[in-house]
Image (cartoon, rainbow, N blue to C red; front, side, top):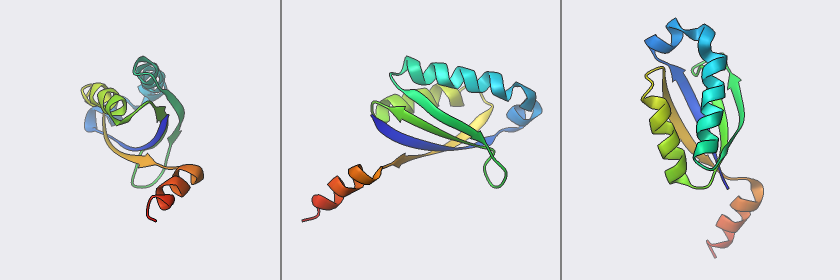
Amino acid sequence: MATFVSLVNWTDKGIAAFKESPVRAARVAELASKHGGRMVNLYWTVGPYDLVGVFDMPDAESLTAMALEIGALGVVRTTTLRAFNEDEFKQIVAKTG
C-alpha cells in the first residue's frame, strides 16, 4: 500500500454545510474502501487547510479515482501528496547509488 496525505479546503458549499462534515468523512472512508484502500485518519485543522486526510491506497490511480469522486461532490478541493515512510525512503536512497 502507498500512503497519501490530502490537504483539504472546504468550498463555499462545503463550509455552508460544515455540520455535515462528520457524515461526509464516513463517506470518504467508504470510498477509500471501494477503491481498495483505507482512510487511516482524518483531522479537522486550524490554519491554511480545513482538514488533513491520511490514506493507504493500492496505487496513485486508486487514490485519484477516489479523489475525483470526492471532488465531484463540490464540497472540498484537495491537494494530495505521496508520503514515504522511513523504510520506503531508504529504498529510494539506495537507488541513487
